[in-house]
Length: 380
Image (cartoon, rainbow, N blue to C red; front, side, top):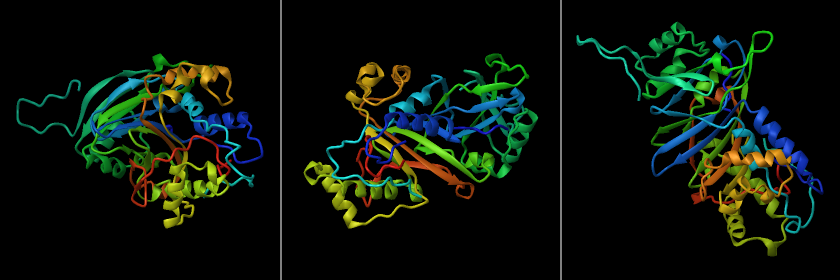
C-alpha cells in the first residue's frame, strides 16, 4: 500500500528576500509533508470537511487507501492545484521594518447509496456492508460500515485493497462505529508511463461529514510511518484553532511572539499586543518539543480575500502565474472565518490517537492573535 499524504517563514537577515519565502512555501508545504489536509469545521452545524491529496507512483493494483470518518461522508473532487495555492496564500507578509528597534540573529525553529439487503430469513447482516460506491476524480471509492475489525481486515484482502496495517488499528475505529472510505486508482483516469507504471498526484478529494467534534484521523496513518511523519494542517473555522492537549502550538508560538515584541518600538504596540504581553508575563513560556508550530493565522477578511480575484492586491513576491492561480480558492475560503495553519513532526510512538481540533486558548483566555507577517523571531 502506498503512503497516504493527507497531505514558512524567513528569519531576520536584515532584508527578507521574498523569493526565498516563496520557494520555502512550495517546498515545505507542497512536496515535503508526509500528510497534509485542509479542514473546515462548522461548530454550529457540527459539520466537518477535510480535503486530502495522496501522491502515487506504481501499479494501479498497488494503491489503496482506507480513510475513517465519524459518519458517512460526501465526496467531492477539488481543484488539482488546491494545496499549491494554499501554500502561496499563506506566505507571511514582509516584516514591518518600522516596528522593530534592532535586528537579531535568526532563531531556529523550536524544537447513502444501495445497501446489502438482509435475507428474508432473520439471519444477521454481514459484518461488512457497502453503503455507496462511485468514482471521484481518478479514484474509485466505496464507503463501508463494519461491525468487526477481523472481518473488515479480511474484506480488504479479499477485495485486493493492499492495506498495510493491522486489525487493532481498524478496531480502534470500528469500536467507535465510524465509516470507512476505501479507494483505488481508476486506471482509466490516469496516464501510464513508458515502463507501464502510473505516476503523479491523485485528485484532491474533499470528505464532508457530521461529527460532534472536529478531528483529524491520525492514528490510522501510523501504519505507513517508519519513525516520524510531518503533518501540515490548514484549519478554517469561525475561530482560531489549535491541536488539543500537549500538541498545542501555544507555548512555541507565544514564546516566539513574546520575544519578538521585546524588539518592537513600545509606541507601535497595539492594545491587543500589550494585553497579551500581560497574559504571557503571568505565566512565562518555554518552547516545547511536543507542541506544534504555528505558521499562519488570520481572519479571512474581504481585504485579504481580494487577492483571489485581484492579483494586483497580492503584496508578496511570487511568480505571477502562481498568484493568478489563487482564484481556484474562491468559494472554498469563507469570508470572516479564521484560517489557522500549523505543523507538527510526529514520532510514530505518539500516533496512538487522533488529533482533536479545538479553539485556540492560552491560560483560560481565547487566543485571537494573528500571525500573518514575518517577525524578527520567525523560524527560517
